Amino acid sequence: MIAVVTKAQPQEELPLWPDGAPNTNGLTGSQEDLEGGRVANVVSPTITVYRASHPNGAAIIMCPGGGYARLAMGHEGHDMASWLNAQGITYVVLKYRMPNGHSEVPLSDAEQAIRLVRRHAEEWGIDPHLVGIMGASAGGHLAASLATLYSSEETRPDFQILFYPVITMGKATHGGSRENLLGKEPSAAMKQKYSLECQVNRRTPQAFIMLSSDDGVVPPENSLRYYMALLDSGVPAALHAYPTGGHGWGFKDSFPYKRQWTGELEKWLRERVTNKNKNH
Image (cartoon, rainbow, N blue to C red; front, side, top):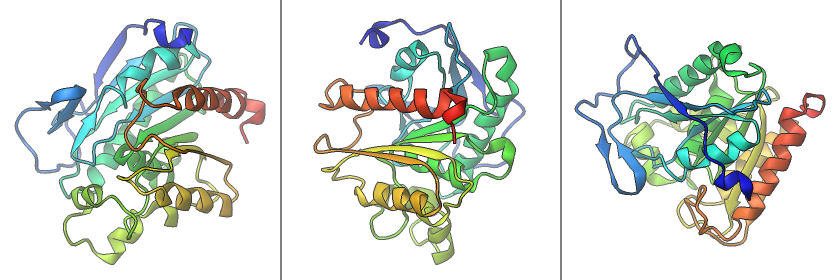
């Protein structure tokens, strides 16, 4: 567990849209700092970059969860920096704007984040073909949105890592996430577009998915639907379902299977991502 106690490298925070975002969610005012390291009303989205002292070329952009209403920036964000840096991975935490019914806003922030990382690839010791997206809960929906709804090759991630993600906008969805993303009465077309199990194709990047079977917030069916859609399209995917733990554990030590998921993900990253000969 030396990776957990190793101090993270100095971080650098960069504005996502220094010249102003191309869209708006209609929210104004100041960011709200809530208890437990959570934030709400993000009006100035950023990326925080933790550079590995011995980079292996890979980078991971993390999208914290929070029901598309707030962001759990600690255990689903910054707390993983030391652990990932110790593996040689450049770690980037995305503080994205809430949709407030403007579904395009979070995805535009995620696309901009991956553009920025690839533009700084040489400076940060990153292989631009080893940039992945990671997300938890509603942040997992955002990560999977980027993996399936990316607008160009420049913004297509090379791999995706999902913690207990929201995937569908159908019956098994997380109601709060759907309402915040799509509004109270979304059209059938919008529900279909953001039901990401319906958007998978053979170009969707390989995936590592984890969840607890007793998750009472986001039904496990979300992960299962996405996993099966990936397999049906011939996309390499790993699914790890732990028997207990509920929802929202992120990097918390209190999750009883932390040693298991961190070990499995480390192995997957070594074998599937950083070893290019096994990348496909």
